[in-house]
Length: 176
Ligand code: HEM
Ligand code: HEM
Image 1 (cartoon, rainbow, N blue to C red):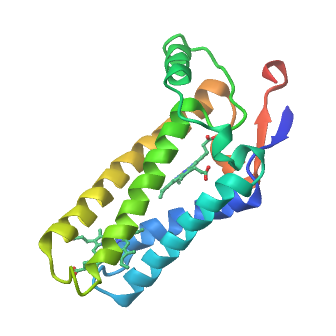
Image 2 (tube, protein in one colour; image 1 turned 60 degrees about the horizontal axis):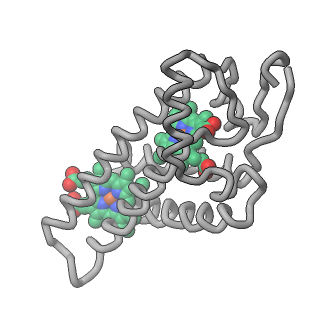
């Protein structure tokens, strides 16, 4: 196995804190409570950190290392269709699309949540509906995200979930 250090501590702490905070707010905490709002503000803090980290973090955390590229997405789809186990050290092109989608969706959840608490929109139905609709969009995206992580791990024989915990991708020697 060849070990490559990919995810710095900033990305890993961001990821697992986001997972815990998102599930807490979505499933466990009463959405009418102050705690829901505090956790929501924590999520907004995490997103702000990630935005900054995308410019000053280590190589693979930077947005410049995973740009949106339709061409690269098409190539990855061909790899998948032909069962080619092309290994990407950082995020894959399709993975990058999903990440921007998740970051945007969760930002919209935070923004609409905050707007609900203002005098201006207090009690307005439409903003509550937007908050809820984007939560559903994020939930569907998360299911796809996790399925894609499992699929890509199987295809490439690289345990991506473990890499998001340890920071290190273990790549089989003959593919490294
Ligand atoms: C991880 C981020 C968040 C998630 C997953 C989340 C999830 C939810 C969900 C599922 C609901 C119930 C929607 C419904 O049934 O109508 C809700 C309601 C609400 N959320 Fe959030 N939320 C988040 C962030 C925030 C933030 C940042 C704020 C405000 C600072 C906020 C304020 C509210 C308010 C005021 C309600 C309506 C409560 C009520 O009157 O019933 N949320 N949220
Ligand atoms: C147990 C469930 C989850 C697992 C196993 C998981 C695993 C992963 C892995 C392996 C990556 C890196 C993908 C790659 O190698 O390119 C990743 C990235 C990411 N995941 Fe998850 N994930 C989970 C749940 C979630 C949830 C619930 C959210 C959102 C609330 C989320 C948001 C993200 C984001 C934003 C990134 C990009 C990380 C970054 O560059 O900052 N994940 N996830």
